[in-house]
Amino acid sequence: MTMFNKDQIFQLLESRDGEALRALWQGRGAVDIAALLDSVEDGARQAAVFRTLPKDLAADVFSYLPGPTQATLARSFADGELQQIFDALHLDDAADFLEELPANLVTRILRSASPQRRMAVNALLRYPADSAGSVMTPEFVSLRPGDTVRQALDTIRRTGIHKETVYTCYVLEHRQLLGVVSAKDLLTAAEDAAVADLMVTDVVSVGTLTDREEAARLLAKYDLLALPVLDGEERMVGIVTVDDAMDVLTEAAAEDLSIMAAVTPDEKPYFAASAWEHARHRVVWLLILMLSAAITGSIITRYEDAISAVPLLVAFLPMLMDTGPERHAGDPGAGSGRDPPPGRAAGDPQGAGGSRHRQRRPSRGQRPADLPSVP
Image (cartoon, rainbow, N blue to C red; front, side, top):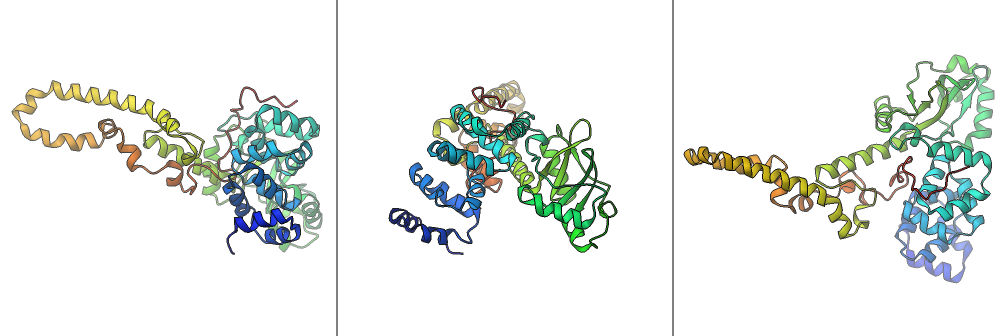
């Protein structure tokens, strides 16, 4: 696949050649188009390029944009455009979108949203930030145990377009999870076979308050595409998908690397932060390390007599200091100079952010104080 030529796109925009632009987007992936939009620095041009996308592609592209880019685009949209994007997003992406916006834009969107959608988004926003409920989506395919394979496939055809995934279907009765059945099993079984005979009843699941990193590890351990999430009454309320789990683990690795590098973890991409912000994130750790260095110095002073008696002990001091926090305290720039940006070390080429679930959000449960509650 050839790379995008931004100059060509801008020329087509100026000439208002809509047919050529539609042909340009054909066959392109949402991730690649999102990367192109994010690389356009001018907000007006970003919005102009976005408006040329087909409707069925625009929502997918929008969901892969970093939060700041989403907010920039949202400010340039009319109410109708905002509502169209909001309605086309999956519920978990819609919740993330709202968290990135200032209160006035959130109010504009929610004013015209349906009561059902407002209620569903509000339910996701209420879960604790580090819980499985904060990263789940309530959009999954549910079947009944008495359904035949023919009926199950009809259900998938009818509702699958609005679901996060159709590859794993869940058999429910009164919202209680009875088992799971894969699309492969349904497609290869006889049409008159009962879903209850095909489903697997030994299901791995988590609760809404389970730590989201634990949920991600369970997905990896059992090689699942999605993990069912149950509420306190054992009713199924959503699923955690494998792409969300990867984002959770990547974010956790970036946070761990930040702490190892004596830097306070931050959700802003590494290269998007100013020098002042980097200094502010590091100053607390440097103060702690300077204190530990002072303690180390007092200990060495206490044993000056022993060191004078056996001068060879001095040879071990550099080795001992290099194994502990004094490595940074002795040279405040050592950690920041040698350690990679946390996001890059965790496998994010843009540095701790810059992809869809991926910048993932200010975490749910940490809504700004000025974000209006959803009625």
